[in-house]
Length: 124
Image (cartoon, rainbow, N blue to C red; front, side, top):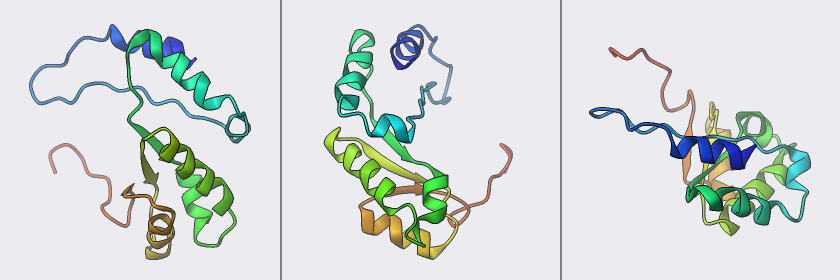
């Protein structure tokens, strides 16, 4: 799936003006995180398109339970994988100071969520 998505993205047209370029986001399951070949598979999938991976997300489902410690091992694995791939890790769904602190302790330098701002419409 990643290979096809990256090949499709190469053919997308450039958008006019200040509109940011379209991006591809692909989720990885906890089952896939256990695969010792994951890094090689990701590199092989991206290679034909020439697209680099530049970010990895720490899903809000993981972030939501991080402060209680129940998802700490999963979060550590995701952040470590990002470090190995030299990717920025973005923690999504940060809603509390405790979640923000837990993400910072893991080494996440980027985050988004209600703690920072609520969603707004384009005019706002």
